[in-house]
Image (cartoon, rainbow, N blue to C red; front, side):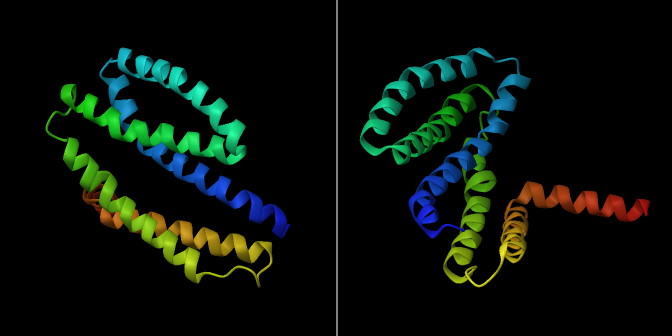
Length: 170
C-alpha cells in the first residue's frame, strides 16, 4: 500500500517473474535429462552458469543495483531456454525440438502473455481493497492457466481424457 515502494520495485518484480517463468518452463527438460540418467549435462550447465553468472551479477549489481540482479536472472534463463533444448534434443527426443519450442512453449506462452497484457492494461485495481485485488488477480491467473491449457494440444487432450474418465467414475 506504499505507492513509492510499488513504483521503485515493480520493474524488479516484473523481471523476476519473467526469469522465474522461463525457469519453470525449463523444469521439464531438466526432469527428462535426469530421468534418462544424463546427469553430466545439468551438472556442467550449472557449473558454467555459476562461472558466468557470478562476475556478471557483481558487475550488474554495481552499476544497476537490484534491477541489475533481476536482469541477470532473466539473462541466465534466456540462455537456458535458447541453449539447453538445442543440446538436449541432439540426444533425447531428437525430432521434438521445434515441436517443443512452438507447440509446447510458444503458442501456450503467447496466450498466457496475451492474458497478462490485457489484464495489465485494462484491469485497474486502484479502487479495490486488498481482498478484491487478490480475487481479481486470482481470476487473471485462473484465466491465464485456462488459456495455456486451451492452447497446448497435448495438455488439452490429457485434460479432456481425465475429465471423461472422471465423469465415467461419478
